[in-house]
Image (cartoon, each protein chain N blue to C red):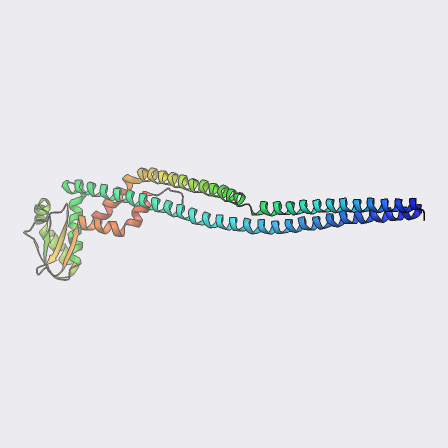
Amino acid sequence: MENLRSQIKFMQEIEAKEIIEDATEQARKIVKEAEEKAAKVRSRKTKEVSENLLDKEASELDSTRLEGKRKISDVKFQLQDEALNLAMERLKEISKDSSSSYRQNLKKSIVKAAMKIRAVDLEILVNSRDCEFVKDKIAELKREISKLKGAQVSLKVGEEALNVMGGAIVQDKDRRQIFNNTLEAKLTMARQELLGEISASLFEGMED
Amino acid sequence: MAIEDIRRLVELEKNGEEKIRRAKEEADKIMKKSEEDALRILQSAEDQKHYDDVFAAGSREINEKSKLIERETEEEIERIRKTAKKNLERTISLIVKRVLEG
């Protein structure tokens, strides 16, 4: 009898233990599954956040860099413009000084302009300040231009005085061909053609 | 089998049932706790605030980088201005020379 009771008791304990063990195992599986799902969710969400941050970084930093480049470009342009404006002031001063190299260059400007015109009957237009000087040099200019053109040219100083700081306009008698070699025209040309050279000179020594 | 023996067996059976009932109760508790744990684990993973915090921290870093680029740009502009100031006279002379020669 005692043996039967022991057996029954043992079986009851086994059953109770199994119930607990089954529940514990099932609980472990539930938690494990949840952890696996959570890991996937974390991975997906972390990836989303990383991608969003990368997009934001690319967009914002690109925009900041672009804005920086624009600012640098604006400053360089402004500094080049200042240099050109100061050069124009300097040219105004030089053109007023009859003893300067300006007069020598004026002759060269006239010759150069004359050589750009195919006609031989030419008229020179200058400002009122340079008018007398050019008239004084007209024979010399005529000789030089004729020599260079290989043909006798007719050269005269126009009646009309130009309102320019210096330089000359040379045109044929019919005003069909005109070459503007005034300081203003050359400065405008310089703004377009010498910008690379001006930039290289102005910013020489900058580390790229 | 004596009556006393039967009574003791019945008693034993009752005790056994009680043990099983308590074990089931315990098992229910274990299951309930695991379900709560699982829910908490998933909620923690889904918690948007955490990702918002990560995004905000990343955004602050981006902002710092952006400010650094802006500072570098300002420094670059300062260097450009200094260089241009140093080279200004020479550049004016170059322009004047080119214009007069042109």
